[in-house]
Amino acid sequence: MLEAVLFDMDGLLFDTERLYLKHWKKASAEAGIDFSEDLFFRCVGTNTRDTKKIIFDALGEDFPFDQFEQITSQAVIDEIKANGPPLKKGVHSILTFLKEQNIKMALATSTGKEMAKWMIEKAGLELYFDAYAFGSEVKQGKPHPDIFLLAAKKLGVDAENCLVLEDSNFGLQAGQSAGMKTLFIKDLVDPPMEVLAKVWNSASDLLEARDLIKELL
Image 1: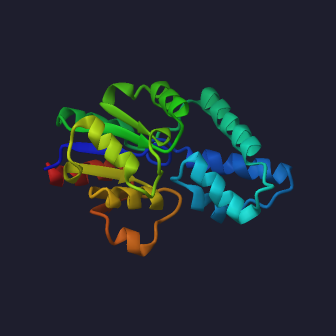
Image 2: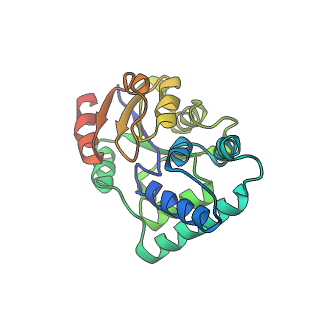
């Protein structure tokens, strides 16, 4: 029985992965550093700590990660302040539908708490969510299940009654490891076939995801 839906944020609710990619590439180009798209995609869905490890493993510990992270995050914030949060197609529709069905909702994101809350409030989505779980609140980030288990605990819902909506490889693995149904929403890069083989279903956008969820009600 479906009681709760757990949402990732970047790349799912907001089209921010493209913003981060654009500004990481710009900052690295200006510094004369080869920062490939493949390396960026390997970081999608991870928290800052794990992203730092992935980049250090690829580029060496001399890479000025903290400086780049600060520059790119500020560039993304400035762009959002100027243009508004880049909502993905169907965000309000799926959130309104789930609220009407009395399905509990939680945000479970690797993004920092301050940034995530600012984004949600800037977009006017805070009234939809019953709970929040942030990467800073758990010992292990995605692909470990901790963040989704924390979200379920905050909602008071058993894992088997939760559905995870994710666009990333690590996010889907985290939901699957938590013993939850997972629904893949396509964004920048597809997960490996072995991960996709374990999802409950896949959708091209949140509107299609909304219609698929009706099967679980």
